Image (cartoon, rainbow, N blue to C red; front, side, top):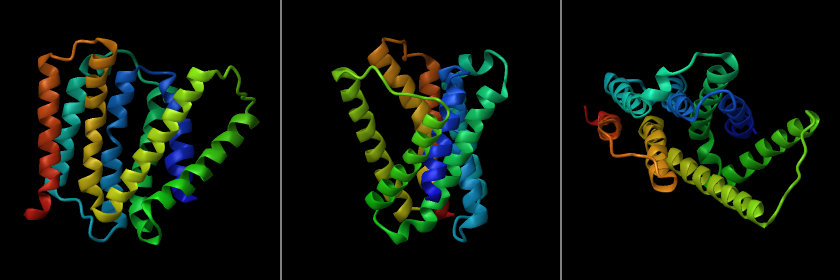
Length: 221
């Protein structure tokens, strides 16, 4: 229930409010900071997840790649609580949920944990939505297929994420979150025809890869 509340209800509610008030590129940058929250919380909550200088360095280098790949969107516009603030709350909730998943992962299988947290968190979102005057209409074959695809993606991704956190340190798993905005840019090039062959893309990929390697190898020192 705790994971469902944080990782599904709180994260998605604040995420979509924030995304409706800022650009997608800004949202990607702020979303990448979930790694910081996860590693920092793990330092205080999980005994064997201490924050080392190599973890901190890897996070900074990885986040630099996220900023580089979205530098134009990051420097444009102002800052608002309903935009950047909401996204930051969503990101903090996701980082906290990653640590919580690690703490309770031994109590069940990744599929079971994912199923229960999505059902509980999704139920709360439905209640909040209808209580706030929301409604559902206009379903057709295409939208139903898209909804089914999104359900599958969420279930598969969260199950894999839970499995990774169950068997690996939080820092080594969450550092890969820096890849999400970079993959977003690559997918934009593939599906939307945007230019992705600039020097900033290559620089971002290098930063993200270096950050991941540093955090992944930090236990060797």
